[in-house]
Length: 79
Image (cartoon, rainbow, N blue to C red):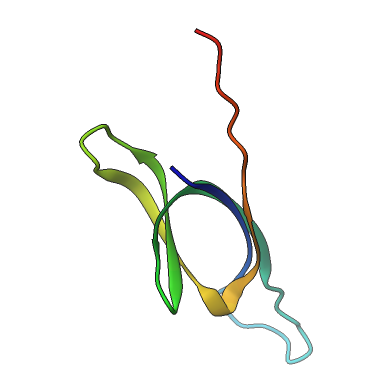
């Protein structure tokens, strides 16, 4: 099972009228989870995986938004 940390940039929005000089930032994000799919245009990460192979709480992150991906080491716990 591969656990990754993805640093990526997300869109930011607001509503209502704004001054013409108001800038709008983007959001820097970090997501950690289990990699389900690595597609050419996106990766899909899940928070949980069951022993039957089902995934829960997934997010698809477009690769054009990704700054960095790191594989995390998982140490074997006691017990």
